[in-house]
Image 1: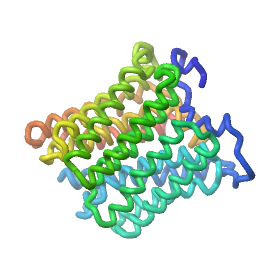
Image 2 (image 1 turned 180 degrees about the vertical axis):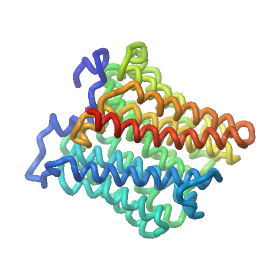
Image 3 (image 1 turned 135 degrees about the vertical axis):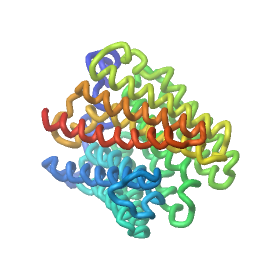
Image 4 (image 1 turned 90 degrees about the vertical axis):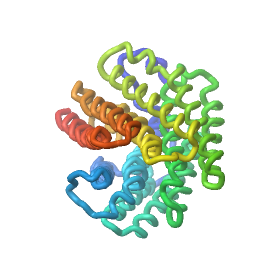
Length: 382
């Protein structure tokens, strides 16, 4: 870890990517693809999942959508979380491992999301399960190379993802929400803990291991004892968010400029939304209304998860794309649309939904499309 990450010109790429640079591979594994084309193809499949998930969101909102199949809202969550976000995370992990077989994980997750979007429900479910299994094996291989606590947390994050994919064969996706949120939260928290080790202090790793264990147990308990498990999960979520908000280096970076300020703003906004979602779980337990459920879902996956993707895109995507993705001021536009639209959506939830909720929801959809276009344009111009 380079100390300059904390105070210097630009944030370094996540050190989890650096497992491949600092730690020699054992044995003679199959080499990763020599060109970026296969990785770009997998990234494109993840993009297809995002487009399908956004289309499903528009159908659920009751507004115009390119495809209006009535089953799409039922698969929206899994397409976005495991199909889209899961593919991005698994692709970055496969690139860190640099073994050809590891790329099967993002391929299966992306194909599972696409199959769901095409109406092949059972096939999509089975592909997601297989993708999660391979994803866990990728993390285990990384842990064998570097048996460190923060890598162990990343291994742990695959347990709720795999459990959610398996249980979705017979359980409604609403009951699996804590598992899906635990997967995303632990993955990102481990990345941030690696990036800001010096700022978070020597106790960051054991603290995160303890919090990760709590979250996985609480998310699992929510299946058997919903009232208790969801509140315990909310407590753990708030604890992680407050810890990162207090100790992460981004509190200093927000006072700088350029990429550092953009990165810090996206991260800080994500932490705030994580606290909002945690309080919904902690105070209310199982959401008692559609409005509370909507906040519990989208404060995490949009306010926290998508904000983290936007924050780290200039840092992580170059390793996947094989070309730079430089920061540009235009990247503030999708970030502002995301959080502005989400705020309007949450206010709409508080006042009985209606037009403000619908407008805010559409703005968040637009923000992701603008982000994809902005990132593509930045990479092409580079």
